Structure formats: C-alpha cells, structure tokens
Length: 271
Image (cartoon, rainbow, N blue to C red; front, side, top):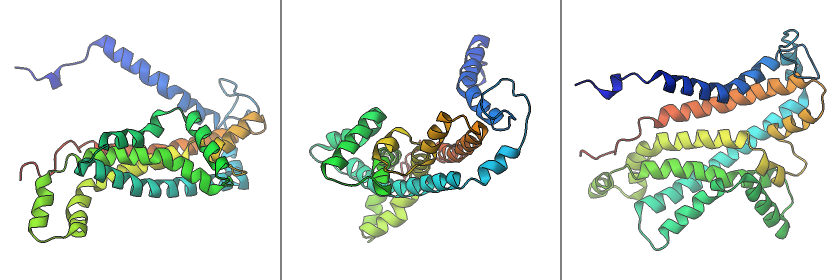
C-alpha cells in the first residue's frame, strides 16, 4: 500500500501554491531591487541602472544608526519583559487549576487579537490619564503588550506537553521547586522560550502602529522609514534600510521555526 507521503500533489495545486508564494514575496524582492537603483526620486521599473553607492550613503547617515539603535534597545527590553511575564502566566495557566483560569488566558492573548490602532489608542489614553510622559519607556510598555502574547503562546503549548510525572519524580527525589524548574522544566521549555523571544524581538523591531501612539520625539527604524518615504530625497536609502529590516526580522523567525518544528512530543510521556 502506497504511503500518502509519496503521493504527488496535483499540478493545479502546485501552480496555486506557486502563485500564492509569488504574490507574498515578489514585493519583498522589489525592495532589494530598488535598493541598488541609480534613480533617486521614483520607483521606475525596470531601474535605469544599478549602483552600490546607497549602501555607503545609508551607512554614513547618523539618523539611520540612531533609529536602528533605538529599535534594537526597545525590542531587546520588550522581549526580556515578555519572557518573564509570558513564562509566569503560562506556568500558572498550564500547571495549576483555579477559578477564572480561562478568562485570564483570554485576557493575556487579547492584545494581539485587537487591531493595532485600538491598542495604540488605549495605551495613549492610559498614559495621558495617569500623566506619564511619552518616552522610550512608553514605547517599551506598548511593545511588551503584544510581545507577552507571543512568548505566552509558545510557553503554554510546551508546558502542556511536559508530563506531570517528570515534576512528581523530581519532587520525590528531594528537589525543591527551584531545582525542579532549573533541571527539569527549563530544559524542556528552553527552545520554546527562545523561539518565543525571537518572534517577540522580530515583532517589536518592525512595529509601527503602537509605536506611533506611544512614542514622544523618538523615531524607531520603521517610523524613520515612513517619514523618509514622504520625502522623495534619496529613496533608495529607505530601501536599503528596509532590506536590513527584512534580514533582521527574517533570521529570528527562521530560528524560531527550526526550534519549534519538532516540539510536538510530550516530554516524559513514555517514562
């Protein structure tokens, strides 16, 4: 009997899949193309010529480095906050039973389900109500709201795949709660936390809408790109920076994919 894995997909399905991939990724390839064009003020296709000078121009612009540094700092701190809060929430929801557990789970994932503009308006109203000045930290708090969800989803799924017998065996052997977490739970959820952290960093790094509502005078890299697109001066520089953003966000997502693709087995299920 022939295995389903060896069955070839119909030609029409292959064509549809190829068309879908082209629709998703051809615009991204155009960003790479226009990063090397000799045309400064328009998106002429095909480009009249190609040059590498925009790489050096972008490299030597201090506003680019300032915006990129701000984005990296915001993404790093937001990810750290999300790792702590998301892991604690996931542990509470998946390892214990209490009244309102499902409600809490819903409230944790709600920020990522809402439109970004709703989250941005809500955060701006809250900061204004308590008279918190808009600054670097308001951006971090805004990004942490959806970064927590990403870490929580990865962590809670992995927590539920850990057999309770592992924790019970650790306790029976005399380990305290901290030792059980360090030597039993953490090794089993480590890849899920790393993947969640990578995804959270990528989401925070290229966030626009929430940043617009929570930033003061600061400009993260995506905000800088939007401002540069309004002005037709040296548009290829914007595409060079966009190319960097694509690479910076692609690598964590790729790493997260490889870390979590084999995470469907329940740890300790056969022990």
